[in-house]
Amino acid sequence: MATEVLMPALSPTMEEGTLAKWLVKEGDAVKSGDILAEIETDKATMEFEAVDEGIVGKILVAEGTAGVKVNTPIAVLVEEGESADAAPAPKVTLAAPPKAEVAAPAAVAAAPAPAAPKASGARVMASPLARRLAKERGVDISALAGSGPHGRIVKADVEAVGAGRAVKPAAAPAAAPAPAPAAAPAGPSASPVAKLYEGREYTEVTLDGMRKTIAARLTEAKQTIPHFYLRRDVQLDTLMAFRAELNSKLESRGVKLSVNDFVIKACANALQQVPDANAVWAGDRILKLKPSDVAVAVAIEGGLFTPVLKDAHQKTLSALSAEMKDLAARARNRKLAPHEYQGGTFAISNLGMFGIDNFDAVINPPHGAILAVGAGVKKPVVKANGEIGVATVMSMTLSVDHRVIDGALGAELLKAIVENLENPMAMLA
Image (cartoon, rainbow, N blue to C red; front, side):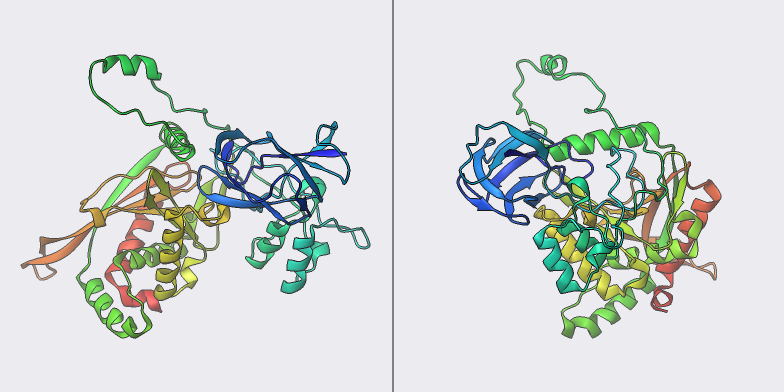
């Protein structure tokens, strides 16, 4: 029987997408695991694969079509000799990315729970691509929980194991999901605003998926998160000298450390030193994480990404630098996978490179805090001996979710960050 292929949800926040490019045409035979098309979400352009075998009987959505809602039929698969006009069988979705172990952010609707691992001796439902990948990586495919239709194991489930993000059984406790945000930010509608500027020259910019998501999430963040702000200055002269010394030694390896690399490492270590602050808000509870998973804001055309450096406390400065450069480059090309920009407990937003002295950043839910980093500027300071001197001073503001982190705990976290930056050699111990 004919089977409808539906627009997949390639990330928890995806509600619609653009069918950027078909990689098959009508009449092509496809099998499970074949890449069918490229989909542009609000964050990235991603490939997706077929779950079932068949022949592409009809393409229902032309490539380049924007605003295609999730679960909208985009094509029909048929059997040999069957017409695409035949009544379709129950709808089949395409492979989705791996589910996260923690509760979804407040701005994300809860995803359906994956099927539990298979009982011994039971038939394992898995795509051929997932089977081949599991064999190559030495993964016991029968022990996996499938995130595909009817518990089918797909490529993403195997890759999740390789990355240390195995999907838990459905019975694992999860936080209750918070309400989803409004579809559009609050404020006046377009018509009354446009009337204010009648007779004035302007260009109207239509919101794309990324800008809509940013507007909705940040509106929700400022309306629902009780922000408070802590400010500290850090003297960078010791760090700048240490950085210059390290860069001279690493030059032969093609490594050049930035001040931001040190900030990432300082924050990652501080989250280990103040573990109670390494936490996120999960609706009706707080989740305290053991690893330091630090998100870093990357500006791109039309918006921003916050790729996450996982286990940042365990990585060297050169490793963090290389990973951050790779994530930033792929973010600007919208080539990040969802698991690379979701999660984390803490974020860094650095506008110092743009000459900004200081600013207050908006918390990215469900994170417990975000650090706003300003420029390093030469300023007069009073030295320990009471004399006036000149130092390179950088202003930092920690925006804190008071539901997760109280004032004294936030102050302790910021103090640890400052001490790490002013004693950079200790971060290598």
